[in-house]
Amino acid sequence: MLYKLDEITNYLKETSWLPEPAGKYEVGYVDIMTEGLPAQSDYLRLYYPTMQKPTDLPERCHIWSSHDTKHGFINFIKAQIHHWPSWAHNSEYGLLGVGKFLDRFCSWGFNPIFSIGWNFMCKNTKIPVVHQAQPIAPPSGKWPVVVFSHGMGCNRYAYSKICYDLCSEGYIVAAVEHRDGSACHSKFFNDGKMEQIVHLQIEPTDCEETIRSRQILQRALEAEGCIKLLQNLNNGIEPVNILNTEQGHSLFNFTGRLDMDKIYMMGHSFGGCTALLTASRNQLIKGVICMDPWIFQLANYNLV
Image (cartoon, rainbow, N blue to C red; front, side, top):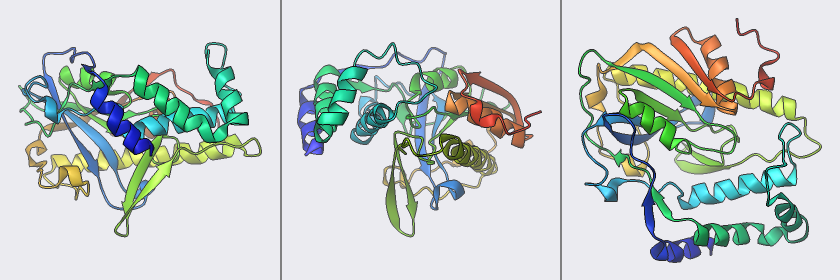
């Protein structure tokens, strides 16, 4: 029913755009998913410089708040309200009281109410990056590479503005979608079947330290898997991309264009923690950019 409601309201909503890329290049993207269980496979959005403008190809630009992403965010909000994290200050969340009331006395109506509010308050916001755009050759040498790790409750394109701005300055940016339960919503393909991954809700009886430690290890594995995929791509070995939206699209144009001697890790919050741990385990990573890193999970690791 919520799918149908989204379809109807999307016809009525005005289309808007996120700000244009800040750098001199336009930005293209492809999504890549390989087959297998989350920790042994890959799921990422690959941003790369192009000359094709989103205003010329608006039909190939993705809407930021797709149905799965929107309802993933709503489920994440509900999970946080159900068990507010002890480490998160809540004074700035004006609707927290309303959310707690709905969760306690009208739990069945939480998702529909938030979904309807989202539908009527938010526009169809498009990301100004062109799907399957033609990549351009680097002006000299190769493109440096950044692997980006998202924060709790997000996904591979929640930080689109940061990623495509960086890409527009002359970088290849690989935004990993983590499938450890920390994303708002994700999926994986295994044994011929696409499986959905909902956000992992922490219960008051759970040991959060144990759960987060398990998640951060999987996140690091996923980031390392992304680096291996990029190495193969640079060597002319294309991944078997199982996403229907990418069938028939070749990634051969990336052969020899990635500077695998200049790999950087970047992340926000839980992603900042992921970037630090991954860099401590992988000598290929030359630098780390952490935005507001959530680092208590790293207390038991020697990162020196």
